[in-house]
Image (cartoon, rainbow, N blue to C red):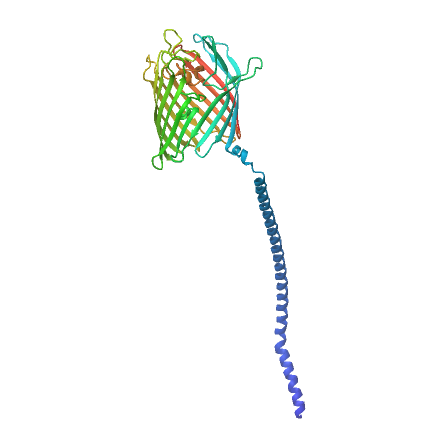
Length: 448
């Protein structure tokens, strides 16, 4: 064998060996490559889907940004339009005037015993309305003025040939009667309010004003809610730490002006302290003193003795009235509902008889505020004949005036915003005569 043949043989053997050794691994790598290709295809598909979702999210975000930009532009445009239609300086005072009011429709049924336990008047049914229109105006940073018109039934008193026309001082109701007759509007409030910036929480009033004295639980032992006294008054609140506040009130009023004699007047002072226990718990207590001047011996030309003792003529007040009042109130929460308990006691210190005391206790559960909410009120009171000035006390209890006792139940339901329905029942007795008095009222009240 020559050298060339040996070389060829050697090369052939090497080729066979290499093929034998390397062939299986090459097959394995082909399978792996196939798997890798499939995985790459899957990953590419997932990546494409993610890219598509990202593109969709970016498109949505862009739409939101465009919508927000458009809303901002619209708001800015409206603001510019408002600036364009701003009121001229000559009538800009309108911005400082607030107009509000309310209307109440009432149906009531009254049963009053006349003599003994079995003799009753035929029950009286009547429909009544009350309408009030209020205007509040800001004069400057320290002065305001207010006016209110209200309905009220007209009465005429003839004295020495002259007629004097007036409306009930403690009622703004108008009965629907007298052949569709027109109804009167009266000046119910007209006053100024001074609140100096140098003395925080001081308010001074003058004119025909809202009764300035605090009534625990909104009781009407001394004042009917509709009473609007005439004169001047102030309220001043003095903080005594973070949880206590002292409230002081004083007033001087003209009850009756006379061109030929002394004027009848009313002077009053009141102070009470309110302590906040914690939200919503609080407690308060206070004392008041009211001095009526020159009431004794004055002729009741308006027919408003209202249970007070008359002199021998039957037409004049036999007593003067210097009334001291003590009151208290406690507020808390029960089962998620606000609850308040209240009471007050009053005595006429210069009454001509021992019929000189009056007291009132009651409670209120929940508050009719939001649509669907409600509140319940209960109170019991006893009022002697000369405990308070009968012309100004509650006009509904025993038909008005003093010398009575009994219960009051009330339920109010908030039908909608600024719309309430109420049911009130008086279960009373006139003390001296032992005659029962029952009164049912249903109200629909609207405010604006």
